[in-house]
Image 1 (cartoon, helix red, strand yellow):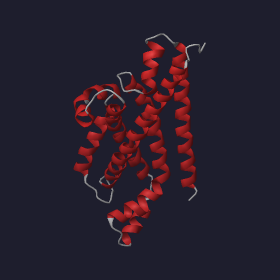
Image 2 (cartoon, rainbow, N blue to C red):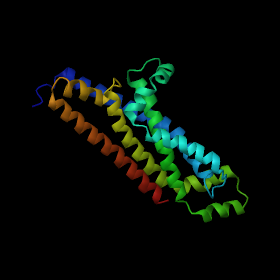
Image 3 (cartoon, rainbow, N blue to C red):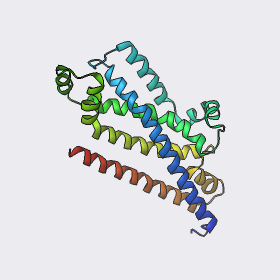
Length: 221
């Protein structure tokens, strides 16, 4: 076992791991930049929110739910024209970032909205009574109080992205998923597939551990 691990194969593992880190990192950060504000918007416009607007909330919520309910592998193929428009190609690590971002952003939005729902309404009402503006309520009440839940949600999102990135590899997205498919499956090298799975397990564990640590630190404010 492991007789197929030449220097070239080890280089492929290193390159594939880096591609996975890039895909998950970039799409996670961009997805958060979209998903967190979207989650805040959904909470503010929800029933009892500071900017309550039922019709608008339902429309945006429906769009978010539609995006979340689309299987990633279908989304990956369906937005190929958009991917080509943005990065100039539908194959490779950069191309995979586009569908990964679109897949994780609505997922993050709902997790952020859920975390914000846990904030005591009394704190918001007290801030309003003192004349706080909407932005002050968001930045000084909602986000600080919900931060542990938001970080926990982002951690879950990054873990999910790792699985999505492996699926992206099945259609030429690069990364460990691509390595596992091309060598572990198509070339019948089970030891390669095993190592890919082990690396992904440790990768996910590292993300989860870092997220749990951040949540504990924020919970002890």
